Structure formats: C-alpha cells, structure tokens
Length: 346
Image (cartoon, rainbow, N blue to C red; front, side, top):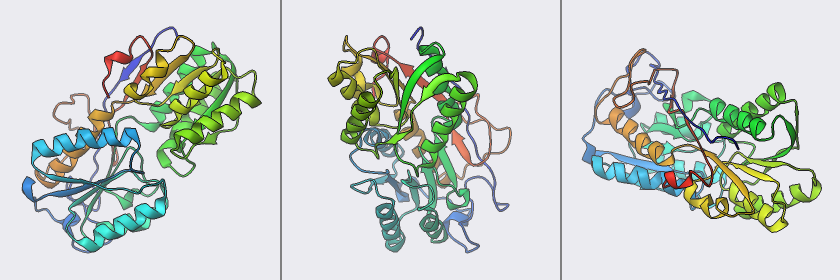
C-alpha cells in the first residue's frame, strides 16, 4: 500500500419530526410519552441502557468502556446489557424486559437485525423510552429517534473499494467477508464497496460474499476455504469485526504471504498479526472510542439539556458539522498498517 490515509470529515445530523423540536421527538405512535415531552431530567435521574448486538465482542466492549467513562463524568447511570449470542430475537426479548421494567429513560442499541427490531423499538418509544441506534441502524427510521454513527456507510464502503483498487493496481481477485446479511449498516457498506469495484476497477474479480456472523473462528474457517478454493486470490476484504483476525490467522497458517488482508478491526486487536513479517495486513475502521463517548453526549444533550439542532447549526467541538436527516454521523475513516498502528490505542 503506497500510502495509508486518514480521511476525516465530520457530519452531524438532526431533524425535527412530527413538528416537535430538537431531541424531544414523539414516539412511534401519537401517545404522550417521555419521548414526546419537552421536559428535561437531571443527570443523576437519567438511566440509559446501552445494548450491543452481542456481549463479549471486543469492539462493543471498547464502545462501552468509552461510553461508561463519559456517563460517569456526566453523572448519568449507564447499564450495559445484551444477548450472549448474535440473535435478534434475544435482543427483542431484552427490549421487552426494559419496557416492562418502566425505569429506562433511553435505549442506545446496535440492532442485530435491521428489520426484526423495528416493532419492539416502536413499542419502546410508545412506552416513553427514547430510542437511539448506534453503529448499525434499523430499516425504519420511525423506530428510533436518531442513528449515531462514526462513519457513513457509503463513505466507508467507497473508501474500502478505492483502497483495494489502489493496492491491486486495478486488477486481481478478492474475497469479501461480511458479518451477517440482515445488518443494515454492513449491507450498505458492502454495496458501496462493490459499486466502486464494479464501476472503477472492472478488472478486479470478486468471489461471492461469505458471512462470519460475529464469530472469529467461523471467519477463520471461511477464509481457509477461500484460500483453498482460490489459489489465485490476491486479497481478502473484511467488512465487519472480528473477521479480520480470522482472515489474518488463515493467511498466516496457509503460508500464502502474497495475499493481502484488509478491513475492519481495532488496532490493538490486529497489531500482533500486522507486525508479522510474513503478512500484509491493513486496517480500515473508525474511531471507536470517540463514537462511544459522543453517543452518550448526544443522549445527554437531548434528555438533560433539551438541546435543539436546526438546519445550518453546528455542534460544539465539531465546526464542520451539519444537520442532515435523522443520522448523526462523524465521518472519519481510519486506515492503518504496521507503520501507523501504534498511533491508535483502542
């Protein structure tokens, strides 16, 4: 790779829905609820639940660590709960438990399935819970108030496609490894990647996408199969963590040092393989710690400060921010290799 680039652009988005101002939107229905109230709450009275797709995955633990530190600084209660396996039905059950409990002010959720979570999230909003999605979104924006994302899916996927094209100098063969078929954000990232390859690098052949489902060992096995079935493979592109680790392990075990491993993983998690002399591993991610922190800040500003954002506004600390739709996006793609991995600590 001739040059590892860091693209940084910041876009924050807020929209007013149902004629209500700023962060005090109504729920999915027309009932009065905390979501539709203009009242604010003191920080010490706020209870926020952060729910990852699955517990135990390193990237979600990093999100939570940053979010928890910020929540403690602000004085709000942040609980961290989620399913023990990547199963949307288990997330649905957990959200139903929160509704029944009646003491949750806001839910910050990374949905495992963009469609399956819609009905229960609408129920949560009708019950007075402010719902925010982060890192991945649902297909129906009325099932949440805002989607908070560090990196726009289209921008991320396009950057992956362009980097792959540059690394292979416009020709070669790649395998694509994604997380799961039903994750809205991952699907959009892959579509953007595939579009760039098709339109700008037509001489790059792409094998059918395989899905690791959030399982590193499955990613390892899938990448072994890719390498065996494609002796002319030049690169493995991984869109979702922890697939990059599995891909690096598979290439390492195969002795196929000519195969580039490129994609999503936290710098600290992939560094060991990135530093191996027999491997060419390049990471492409976003600032996980900043997203965890800012997700909590956004919830706090809405519920405790009654913050309103209007078209043309900027957000404090982000002078290039703007208001677009219901997506709050900090567009920052980080690409790193063995020469720059130590610049990041997450």
